[in-house]
Length: 377
Image (cartoon, rainbow, N blue to C red):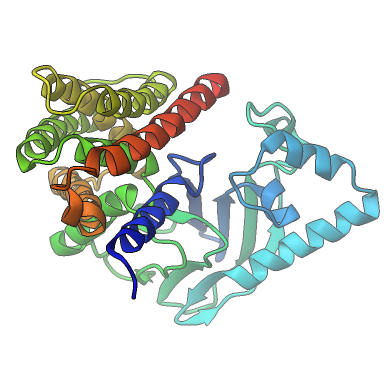
């Protein structure tokens, strides 16, 4: 028969796996920026901005850029040619531009290769970051759909119709197909419901599963004490603060460089975890400190929202929905934490067996991220 202690250990192990699995990518929300131009001469050009060096070598796109460049430069001309052909084939197999439901053929080129755009890039790269897909729009086509497989990150899609002088933007989840873009007649604007649903989902996934630093911060709040009141005070302070700075930054009222915000967010994780170790309950200053850290986390959220952009006609709706998605993600984290260890929060050994060891691990991870982010700037 399984003992309660072994169940607890298993749940805690699972929780740690979720939090610690990608240490080197604590705040990953990379987008495959994609621009599709529909030209008056009946052709199309799609530029995908992604880590071509990593794709050519078949490794994750968060791999060390300098090491990727060194590996590619060590290849013989024949080996490099084979890698480039395989990379072109990857785009042909994993990307689709469908006109009236039928995939259109396209040529694949890498215009940044061996140009200053690659050789003088602040991010080390050999092949550059642009994959260009070029082809012809079938005569009489009435709609266009774009698809990129899960080999790529979420797609930030812009369709530039140069014939009707219109531009539409949308964000696609990894492996999702775009809504049909009408090639004739008036351009349909997204409904308020679709905008709200999209930005709600984007806010949610920024916490679960991608916002690992925010997850650890919320877990640090959860671990302090055993009562509900400390958690309510802290989460309320954090929520109000990050919602305020996210909204102000998204509207262009406040701004702070990412090089400052990201290390401080990691340092906030260290502080909360260390205070969990040093104090056994809610101190008078803890909610105020959490509020201050919430302001920083809100600026981090705003950086992501800045990458996404807000819908031109529904900026307020997109902002509110993104905020709500973040809150739902936080509630899920707290719910999972309660499911894992809530049953033993009233036990005398909770602090020594749960709060202290988990807080030490969280502090160590936060310190690692702080150093990493400072050195990366």
